[in-house]
Length: 428
Image 1 (cartoon, rainbow, N blue to C red):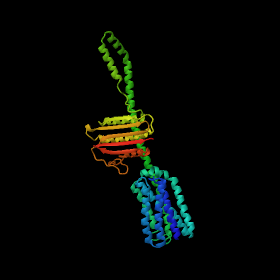
Image 2 (cartoon, rainbow, N blue to C red):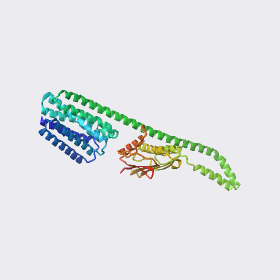
Image 3 (tube, helix red, strand yellow):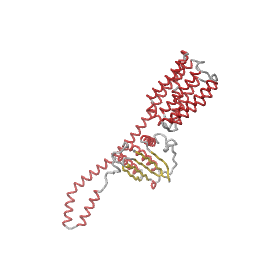
Image 4 (cartoon, one colour):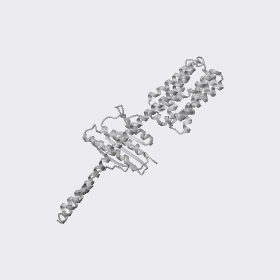
């Protein structure tokens, strides 16, 4: 029985570490991460050996060892994780539940056959099957989606599930003393699996909804910019038609003025035409059509709010960043700046937008706007937090998505009552 108990705990620790290595975004190289996992497992097993051989029948001994083991194992997840955030906690608590599958299967085999070697094999097999299924079904979802969507309250769910399992199987009485609890534990395990599936579906649907909202906003800004350019092009075509229609009459007028040696009047007519021809119809900030359309739309929106916008952009038609991603983050940051600046006195309404692509090796973006009010920054992302609720603040979430997707360096701060956002991407 003692060997069986040690084997179950050893399997739980080992598979927990495997789950950590699989689902966490690791801070350290693989060799260093494995060393940390081995150290945590060794420490936990030493405690379990002491308990099994010196306090095996003590309920309180089991409780004391668990009180030490659980924080150590959960701390391992936080140490391994690149970010000490809600996702690391959720992964730690969830892994504790995942390894209970092998424990429950082995307990069922013990009750049915009293064959401890078979129960030990069942424990390992149960944990292996669960790991393979989870690795195949939710690994990509967790590493690509869940880590961005998880919030602290979700960690309560796996934590409470683990406590429930512990109270049912080990404290204050063992499952052997109340065999019927093992069936309840099995039912609860199925419930937990279904809960995880539903939770992931909810998070996936929520993420898809936000992505759709961001894309709709991007397309709205892009279409608005295209409409502005289309109107300008139509105005240019209309004026050129008028000019072509009037050209014959002007040629006769110029001929007559020159024949009469009225050179000053002829020069004035020519100067007027030159000024007219130099009139700018289409605003071109950069060669990239999509980004240029977005900037045109944002400039028009700023003009309607009485905001002076200075735009400096040198982005080629083709560059390493997806055009729509770049347009979206530009539209969101500029729109946030417009909303903040529109509240200020007319003389303070000013926005500076600079986007520079340097030989395809890096992309730099900087947006500045006056900000006399106090801004709350998120400790997790470093980005400002909206206090208005609803859809407000989604723009900054999209900025976070952009930064993570392109492994960009971002900075957001206030200096001399000027709100500054900078994003830098290296492509080499």
